[in-house]
Image (cartoon, rainbow, N blue to C red; front, side, top):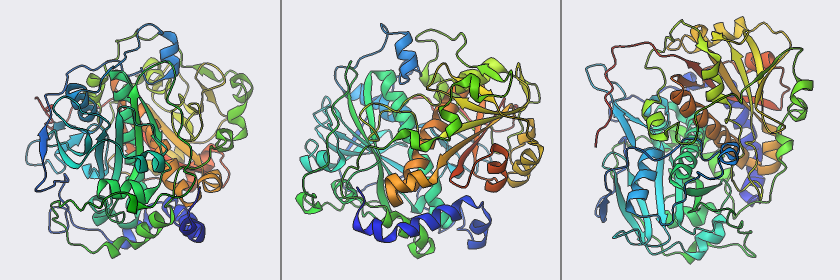
Length: 546
């Protein structure tokens, strides 16, 4: 379902899409906001004059990182956790391990000191996390809360269970409650201007992906809703819908055999007038005019919807080769299976993996020793497992493709591979010989803080922009970036569990990457992850101990 505004301005979104994929030249032409000065927004959104509830100390262990993957659950049918009630302790663990502050950086060179559970450009963390409890959680009354990660506390914005207007407008069941990830554009746009829309959409996807991991480990079932009535959800949370707007809604329910039924679109549009208006006051430290990122605002306004959309056809988002049996699609002798031996249930603790997850440090010079292929396989085998979302009735594979440039890896020949999943056991399929050296050189030039030439592997995530525009209109840009963000977070967390760092970078030449992979104009790279073993550095980053 596309609003009239989106229909009239869809071309704006398409033009902006292309612009953000041309590289970072336009970004530098726009100029930057200055960090550490009057332009710099407060790193954590803080409300004033509203009830605040401190959460209990988060659990040190919450469960296996792989419970959200269907293949792992099928292999361990008896051990899957089930959470009967979302109480304060479970809520504390869910919020902390989804978006809490996991470690801090100390010392005179600590430019970006606060590290959360997901990667963020310069640690700006533009995503804000809200939770709406459908029923009381201990002494916490039902209501809508904002999560303050620095204080590990909740601020009550609106009392009462999830209103019908929100349930219908977002297409949610909300049996236990909702998680809403918003994008507070100013926190990134003061520096990156219009380019911030891409970064905000990617981080919203990574945050949603992390919530799926944490929820499943605790015994919750979560469903991601990308398409919802923006006006209703924003008004319910007290967001202005311009500087900050909801990006993803997650429907929470206790894990069980059958998922909650998808709520269909409303028979008639719901107006925001059906919810009482709230205007909660929060601290503002940046006075930069939002006119400095007017292109971002135009694209976001064009993407507004008036309710849930119709199901999509997932196969429309994959190149034809992606639908062929693995043996047929690979070059001769070029199938590397990923479904090898792995620890049993409980063997990959999510909390430990999130603690270990990092981006390799400010200057990521990977250890020159080759990475064992088993480590790479652990990081990639579940990357394209189905996601429960509002795209289809049943969980479907993410609407992205994945390609892996293997470099310094023991047990695999250097070269470009495609990650195949869904038609059989996951595998890397070697593509016909290509000269990838120029792309590695380009990555080193574009992102000098990362030595990609020393990496164990480089992962490229791609999306079909034309299918996204056809199915989602102007909303497609952010939907597909969020889908890619879910996959990127999976890779980052499982790489950390395997002893590897994953550095996300948008500093690449789109055309060179597309030519290397052999993509047509419709398929575009949206994410690059550099995987490698981190060397010891002088950075002092102690864990945040509760």
